[in-house]
Length: 303
Ligand code: GDP
View 1 (cartoon, rainbow, N blue to C red):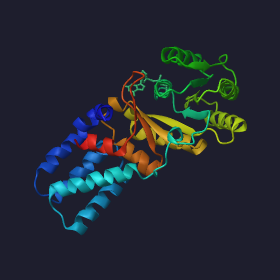
View 2 (cartoon, rainbow, N blue to C red):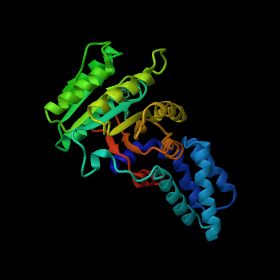
View 3 (cartoon, rainbow, N blue to C red):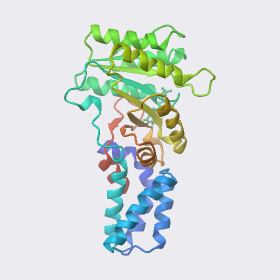
View 4 (tube, rainbow, N blue to C red):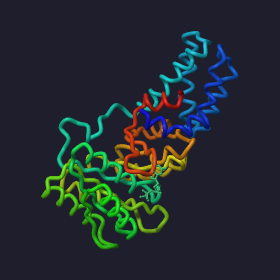
């Protein structure tokens, strides 16, 4: 909880903090709806999502005939939580009692979003919980990406499977799975390329990696996580659509949430993409990753 609180500190202080003043008035006048709208849009929740949330809050408030700010605040809290739960209550593959072995997680996202750091953080968390982890360096396009993953692998204390720069990313994925099988590893996390602005087709490459993984294990990847940079706000949403169109993204990691006042993007992701946020990035260290909890998130924002 403390970690979530720290991660949304900027969003709370910068934008959601204005809610406190708004709700301090005993009665909730009509003019205040505009201000609520401004606050949500200012946090990058997006116009469509903001409208959907506030329509529901207003409808409920009218139906109940309430004007007291305290009750409107409760209804708003409810609806914010409900929005984050919209993608459905699916349990992530690693939390299922019958979790497959090895559990295969494919990680996608544009360069700079925080992919490599997130992979290291997840590896650290799984290892801390007693699992053996193997990382696959399938961004063979940038030599630096492989090097960076190797450095993290050493720091966290997990094995990294890598090929030469320019090698076939599918072959790296295949070899990582084979290594996991022979060493009976519990978790495989595969890093992928994130060059969105070059002519070579990244989405075709990701689809191919996905196919190679499926040839080895038809049930894999068990999770495909898209890492989004929370500081890019609504732009991240557009990026997300590009990726979800190409590979079946099952969850979002919202990296760098600690570095932005635009944390409301989480509402837009849930409402407009219908994909659950699984983790939030709360800093640059390997410990700085927290599972995403809708209630904690909303209560931290409204604190
Ligand atoms: P990649 O290109 O997507 O693999 O991105 P990196 O993992 O290299 O991360 C890019 C930069 O963002 C690095 O400087 C990271 O330290 C930083 N970063 C990643 N995640 C977080 C986070 O949750 N919070 C903060 N403050 N910085 C982060």
